[in-house]
Image 1 (spheres, helix red, strand yellow):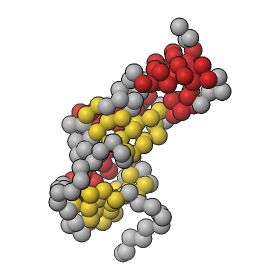
Image 2 (cartoon, rainbow, N blue to C red):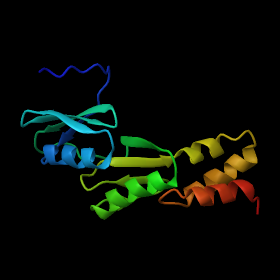
Image 3 (cartoon, one colour):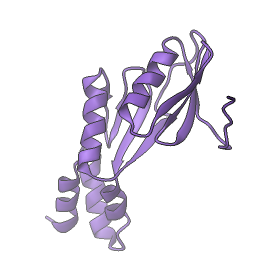
Image 4 (cartoon, rainbow, N blue to C red):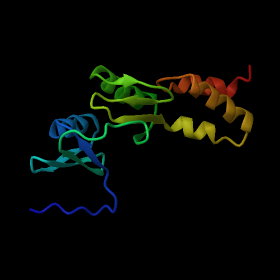
Length: 152
């Protein structure tokens, strides 16, 4: 059975090695994910419905902060689940909800509350939330909400 890609755009990552392993790792983290195909060089997979591909083709440019995957997290529990998994498996924390996984790929784990609070029509409230977020590594919704409520 041929796998047909109906998406117009598919992220395509160049890995030096371990591309299939990385795809298996990513699909183990995100619900609704699966490996679609693997020909030994290109592994096609879906992460929560997003089609992706990894090319395993030897040394090339390393991943950097110029490209990241934004994960729209429903709540703190979802942020924590993904954050803990990536960090416990050899990832590195960064700032403002960003981290680098064990393969060097960058992820943004962003709770929906951050977007809602930073888009508040009151610019002072939104600014306080942004200020709180800029001091965080993992985004903590409780602390964002406190900054939103408290002008002190």
